[in-house]
Image (tube, rainbow, N blue to C red; front, side, top):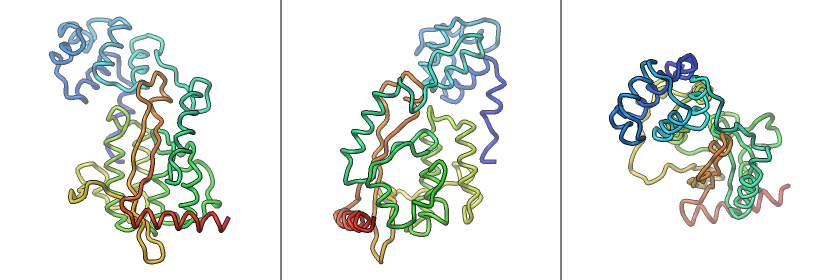
Length: 281
């Protein structure tokens, strides 16, 4: 296991225990949460101990003050006997049509640079043309099957991994990023399962199984994806876009990642590789 699974324990908790779990996760005292939310410290204490049954609105106010992810706000409401407040939604759903249209436009505008839209678990939802063209320079993407996942593409020895310079450094930084960017800074069960699948690949040291085992050098402003091709190195870094004010779970959990060249040499090499890939298809 990556860590003792908090998601399994959390599923069995009542509303008061869930509130205390999130307050502890955020490092907030009852007094500080009271000052932020406007709910009295006494009432918060009674909710956490199970002595009071909070109203739906008070739970939503406390969840907002603790920056609890929308998915987990629904769990908090359900534990208190209330209906969920936020629709699950799907990437293909009508409620996401406006977001999907905007992201498709951004993917087109990102050309000639590779860009990908992913869910919270790094599963590929859509890409622009540049991303598969670039990856085809290193691995045959036509042989891929099933749901594509960017992290597994980088960790799998049969895919991009053999072509990555300083793979250990990149892998460490990506695992660290999974912990850091988990929605609401909370590693849920599916994130835990994703981490376990990455750590099961050959050559992944056991000490990477906890964030404390991840030592990232600080001598560079970014840790690039450095791809080796014919003795040359293509160095790319990422810029990430998320939905600013999501009101659905799907909206909160989607993001667009744009891969940019680190330097002029990489920009020139990227242009050559994409042209070669275009001419070979």
